[in-house]
Image (cartoon, rainbow, N blue to C red):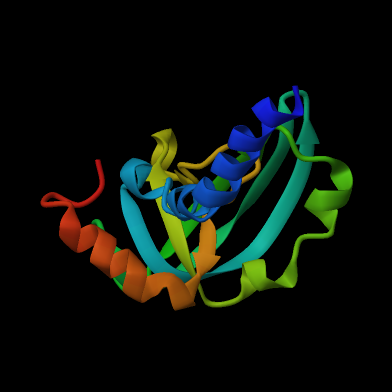
Length: 142
C-alpha cells in the first residue's frame, strides 16, 4: 500500500517548480493592461459578497495595453474569500512600485483578472521574465 503513494509524492516533488511557475503567470492571459505602478488610497468595505477594496493605481510605465504613464486608474477588487484580518493587515509591499495585472470592468474601473484573493500585484523584479513571456505570445495576452 505505501508503495502506491511513492509515485504520487515523487511526481508532486518533481512537478512543483513547474506548477509554481505556471501559477505565477496565470494572470497574463486575462489582462487588458499590465503596468508598473503604485496603489494609493486603499479603502476597504465589508459587504454581503465579501470585502470590497477601492483605490487608485498611479501608472508609471505601460508594459502591455492602452494607457498612459502618469494616468491614475480607478481600482476595484472584490475579495470574496478574504477574512477581516488579511484585509485590514495588508502587506505594505502592496503599496510599493509593482507590476499590476488589470482587466477593464464596466464603469471605467480596473480590477484584477485573478482569483478571489489575488489582487493582481507582482514584484517588479519579474519584469524581465514577463517580457519574455509576452514576446512568445504573438498578440500578447488573450
